[in-house]
Image (tube, rainbow, N blue to C red; front, side):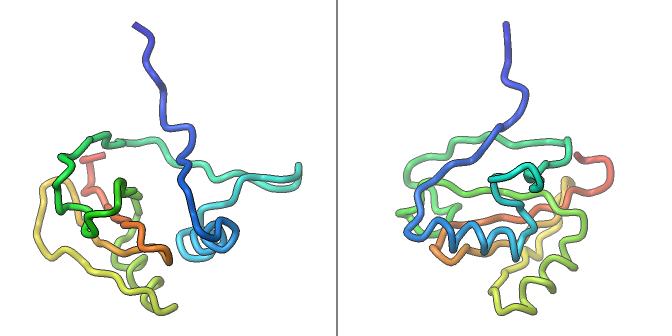
Length: 124
């Protein structure tokens, strides 16, 4: 059976797509879709990707009206949290210890939930 190889893109609606794309670029380092040969697209590192539908009434994403949440792997969660907080972005670190990593939560300017995950050595 053929299988998909990876997520090729994440597409979602926005009230102000240009502004939101700039926020992701400026705060999380995600390059925008290139519009010219001199630009580089965002490339993710190889590693684990969780694909998990949740029950419609799950409170895991926070706001019940939000239908999705994206989880980004990071190399240094503490440094990323400090970087985001330095520009006024509210981040909530999960203080629980997990065998597979550390987590933090934030929302983009349109309220979409984002989870940051630093895998523990060998768990990715």
